[in-house]
Amino acid sequence: MSAPETPPPAVPREPLLVSGAFPSQLRGNEVDLYGAAAGEVCSALRRCPAYRPTPLVSLAAGASELGLQALWVKDESSRFSLDSFKALGGAYAVLSLSAERAGLCLSKLHELNALKATGEPSVFCAATDGNHGRSVAAGARLVGARCIIFVHEHVAESRRELLRQGGAELRVIPGHYDDSVAACREQAERNGWTMVADVAGVDDDPKLPIRVTQGYLAMVHEIREQLEGASPSHVFLQAGVGGLAAAVVAAIADFGWQDTRVVIVEPAVAACLRLAAECGEPRPVQGDIDSIMGMLSCGIASVTAWSVLCNRVYAYLTLDEREALAAAYWLLSQPTQASPLAISPSGAAGAAGLLKACAEPSMRESLGINASARVLLIATEGDVDGLLKKRQNGVAEA
Image (cartoon, rainbow, N blue to C red; front, side):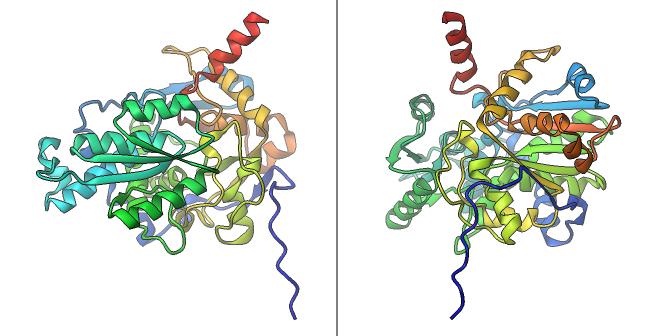
C-alpha cells in the first residue's frame, strides 16, 4: 500500500523560486491563440466610448534609487474609469460573444449598438473580487443584457457598491473567491445564464476564460507602442489565477522579445502559480488565503493560463503583507510628470517584488538585475478601497 501523498505547503518555504525559462520558449498554437486575436481585440475595444490608452510612466528617480537603467510603470488606475486593467477582459468577452451570437464580425462594426439584443435580454454572470465583475457589467450594459455578479463575503462594501453602480445584480456567497466561482457556475448551469469566467478548471470550457485573457492584450500592445522600440529586460508582474500573466507572456513571445525575464509576484498565502510550478500542474493552496492583496487572493491557478505560463516564467517571488503596502507607498512617493501613482497593495505587488529583489544581493544576482536592467511594472489597479488615504488620515489623526 503506497504512502498517502503529502499535501503541498500553504506558504512557500523560500520567497524565490527560479526556473530560468523565457516567454520566447512559447511556440505554435499557444502564440497563435493570442497573437492572432490581438488585432480584433484592439479594434473592438477602441470602439468603446470611454477607451483611452493608459499612461506608461517613466520613474527616473526610482530607477536611480534601485540601480537600474530604466523603470517603467503602466498605470491602469484610470482604465475605462473602472480603476483596473480588468476593465478590458470581461468587457471584451461579452462583446465578442454577443457579436458571435448575432452573426457579426466585432472588428468590422462601426458602432456597438448593433450588438443590442431585441426581445428578452440575455444574462451574463461572473464571480469576482470586484474588478472583473465591473468589466463584465460594463460589457453587459453595452449590449443591453442583464448582469448578475457573485462576490464572496470578504469583498469590501465599497467594491460591492461600485458593482451596483455599474448595473450589476449582486449575490453574496460565504467563503472566499473560489466559493463564489463555484456558486456562480452552479447558478449559471441551473438558469441558462452565460458565465464569463476569468479562470478555468480542468473540466471547464476554456473558451470564455481565453477571451477574457485576450482582452488584456490591448494593454500589452499599448505598452509596446509607448516603449517606442525599447524592450524590458525584466517584467515584475503580480498574479492571481494567471490570466494577465498569460496575456503578457504570450504577447512578449509574439513581439519577439527574446531576453525578457518575467517574474511572477504573489502573496505568500495565495501563491497558486508558484504552487503549480512546484507541482507541475494547478493544485489548490492549503490554508487561509485572505490577504491585503485581495485581488490576488486566489486558491488555484487557471488551467488555461497555466498552459501558457508553464516553463515560460523566469521566476516566482512571494510577498508578505507589509511588503505590498510599503510598495504602494513607495509608488505614491515617486515623482512623476503626471498624477501621483495612487495604487492599491494588489496593484503594487509587482513593485513590491522588485523592491524585495533589489534589497537582497543574492536575489538580485539570481534574477540578473544589474545597472543595465530595464524593468517594466504594471500597476493593475488604483487605490479602489481608499486604503492609502485611510492610512494617511489615520497617521495624521494619531
